[in-house]
Amino acid sequence: MRVLIAEDNPENLDMLRRRLERRGFAVFAAQDGQAAIAMTNEVRPDIVLMDVSMPVLSGLEATRAIRGQAAVAKTPIIALTAHAMDGDRARCLEAGCDAYATKPVDLPSLIATMERLVPAA
Image 1 (tube, rainbow, N blue to C red):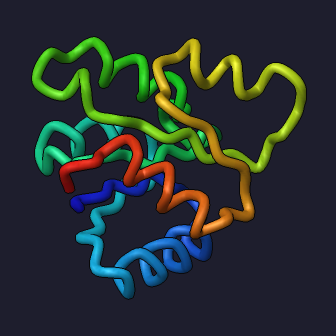
Image 2: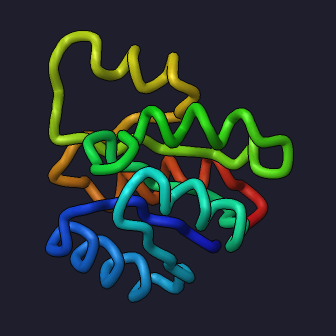
């Protein structure tokens, strides 16, 4: 499975990248919302792990932009956020995310969600 991780925190990105690569995933990275949009169009990942709070464009703004582009509009997107407040999940889903996970990431749960959203990969 080809995974784009949109994450501006280098430590979080490195940790998640290494853990997914060890499990055989092909991982690509973007460090802000604008780069996430460009990489989604360029790489055509099977799924996007989108940090909600990023520079340039937030993860929710980037998700809305991706949903507006026909070629990649159906790419599954999982929102990743350190925010676990009331309404955060709903905001992520309203922006077009297919699922929502809080940080620190529970890797087995995240992988199960990824496999549910991309069953053929």
